[in-house]
Image (cartoon, rainbow, N blue to C red; front, side, top):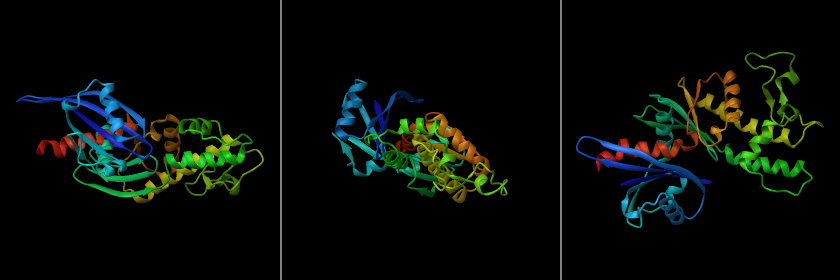
Length: 286
């Protein structure tokens, strides 16, 4: 039998296909495949996944669904029961299982950002912000349309990050070093004093995108610092799978003081968390 675990985000669907077999002594679980698709019709998406792995619908035990889009689903799909897992639980379990920590603050940077604390006995949402990957795409493209003479065109997420790598935010942001001769307490001269407050003649489109990305990441990290306790912070999400993003967050953590951890498969953390929550808290009760 198979189980599909699905994360229905606002911009992407992510999935795991797992095979599960049981006997009197043990339950065997194997990962058959994983992937992501742009948001599309639910039925079309499910059938595409099943066809990709040559799976007959009658051999699917359950569909486990999480993410904001799962709220629009019914209780079954063509006779297959749909089990819905609260997204905060999926975030917590994904972050803790992948990091192998017993407790942590888990920060999911998706289209927006959610912060939860969990020790697997309880899951508490402790903060969040509308800043995230959606902001980078939306604001990044808005900025580019103003600084480029080319006809406006939508630039995707990965291209914007690549542009930021080649930009210099100090040509756009006012830095501590611009207003003070030295550090101010633990604020070093290379820390932002004010976003977009020092636009100068040298600024180009790469600098603007770098400044947009910096504004998003700094403010997420500062919010995490404000709402979190002394527990380790685990970052998950598609945005965090990029090595450059990780380097930026590590740099910011030098002055926020949070101990941060990145995990493998961070873009699949929520769909993994949904599966783990279902396996540990729901399936055993059936």
